Image 1 (cartoon, helix red, strand yellow):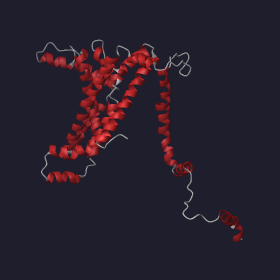
Image 2: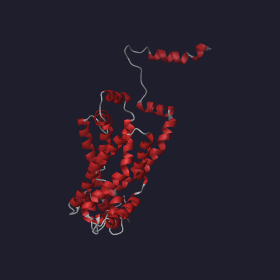
Image 3: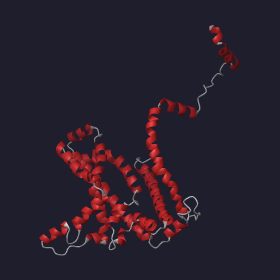
Image 4: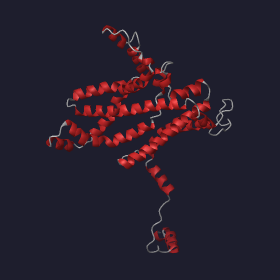
Length: 332
């Protein structure tokens, strides 16, 4: 009975003959190996499906609407049936007299935020890391992290209550001190960038410091012990131990921040905007809103936003390549 059941196999082996010396066993195809992996770890792939569906629906599907930047969009014809016009809207944006003022305002606020926000975040993380009392450390972290949960509308409301001329907290304090003429900083074109940047520092520095604190907790304690034995001061320990440890993370976050340098937040810029500071508060995001929605120029507004995104992508690629070449740390 045994010889009967194995006969076909023996016959096939005789037909195929012995394997050639030096020949490698035939490997399954890449698709078959991938399918085997999916079957083996199907639970993990099932967990991945919801975030993939979220990305596909809310991040990739809307990209199809970006094509109206190259069409003469007509709501009655829809996105897919409006006629193509090529780069006409992008050329009209570059030739627009408001192109350079809006770009200058956006760049000035973006660079200002980058130059102030990153050092403040690192300094706060280093300062919290040096606190020895756990209670004080938790208190400082809570106080600095709390503003992150305040919405932009509430933040701007607080700023107006504090800085409003005549009725604001600063005006009341100044009046008590004998000052009767307080400048209206909310309407000053030169003060808009500082209001935008420093309110953002107050709101997000505590949140950003958590990332660096997480990196600092992974530093080998023997390095701190060696620095203490060598008699290093706090500043020397920060310069020789802490800063080298957080530098790769700082470079990656800097690259990501440079990618958003032209993406000045719409909500705060729009809420702080008024007719008196419009010369410096008109940034790309507010201009896209006014041109694309309030004036009904949907193709033009999309072209401006798409132009902004392309410039941001180019900046990320350039800075990432420079950081990879200079420091060895990069985003990809």
